[in-house]
Length: 499
Ligand SMILES: Nc1ncnc2c1ncn2[C@@H]1O[C@H](COP(=O)(O)OP(=O)(O)OP(=O)(O)O)[C@@H](O)[C@H]1O
Ligand SMILES: [Mg+2]
Image 1 (cartoon, rainbow, N blue to C red):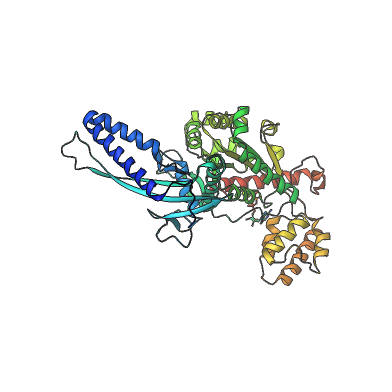
Image 2: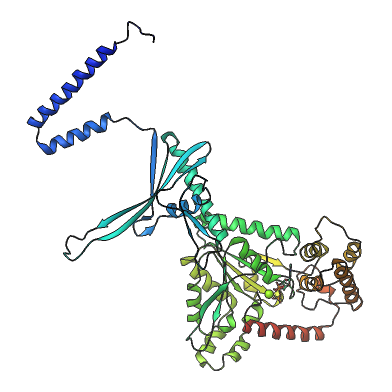
């Protein structure tokens, strides 16, 4: 081994160490004699604090609760870490509650896990510390066991800013996405059973399979809706800054069977929002309406279907004839814009991330107050099936992808553009057989038949783009048809939603 003259020799190091130890012992014994016990403890602690080697690691403690509320970072970490498990983990906790879709996997106490973010190593540990709480004032108290659960995450100190500013926010966001994924959506409808005084919400799982991928709608309109929803959910701060309730209103209009209810389900599935289906025809008192609205949760969609029929006051008066006259008078004063103001008022004070959707087959019959700018944020016209819509349905129902061609497609394209056929009718026809050739042949026959019969769009809404002119029936016939449709939709409204 190389040894330099300038370096202290091993024997000198040893003698220096021996003399230092001796002097520490001497100081200690002097201190024992001279310094009172409590002061001595304090000085020793201070001495240890200054001479202890500094660790390059910083450890964050993430406790389960902060005060009486749960700690969101803990909940998020629990969910996030379940996606970061490694083969090294030896003990995991598995659970599933009735409302969960899948098994929940969580770290068992003591388990460790290493995560990497931006090239930085983060060491996680889940700790459950049991402690005994003794209530000294109560002689009968044998002590209560309580469990303190927390995560520890350690990393190099120099990454503190990055962990606090980027890593933990990412965990919160990721966990929210994962929880949304897991979430079973609910459809809330009114319970108006006679054994229950008043009305209340009843919920069932929303298992409507409609998504934006299965919805036949013009690509531009569909993208506009998706972008609008994305913008809405991201703008919490914006709504706060401009002093508006964080809500968005959509009016869906178009003939029956064009996908209004399917679009609502697609929106709910996309946003993972529950649906509250408010059948106004079943609400008798303003106080009930208020109670119902207060019982709706944030991140939900309030739906009022067939709005032109639901607030048809003479009909509601008739339906509620067994109730007292004052109530009838109260209802007669209920206008759509009044209802909206009422909802706005409630939501401004106690609602976040709310969507309200009205549907109608007859936009022209709506209260103009509802249509004025700023009332319903987006008007969405659901119309007859276009060739583009047909291709999407053919892909969904017959498995003929949008890139594939078929010898009947050219003929269908020519026929469908001049025929008023709803996506519901197309879907029904394509479902009749699994043999795609056969299905398309009979679909062509249907289109030809409709064209020959000079099929009309008796429920189409005139919207200024000339569609009203396409109608080939006279006014009298049309009124009868509209009345029948209205009766039909009123019946449906009373029965419950068509979602
Ligand atoms: N645009 C569409 N894309 C895909 N499927 C559709 C579409 N429109 C209708 N359908 C099919 O037709 C069925 C009925 O449609 P939906 O209930 O959404 O129509 P609607 O416009 O709400 O009708 P209504 O005015 O009678 O309430 C749906 O369950 C779906 O199978
Ligand atoms: Mg509908």
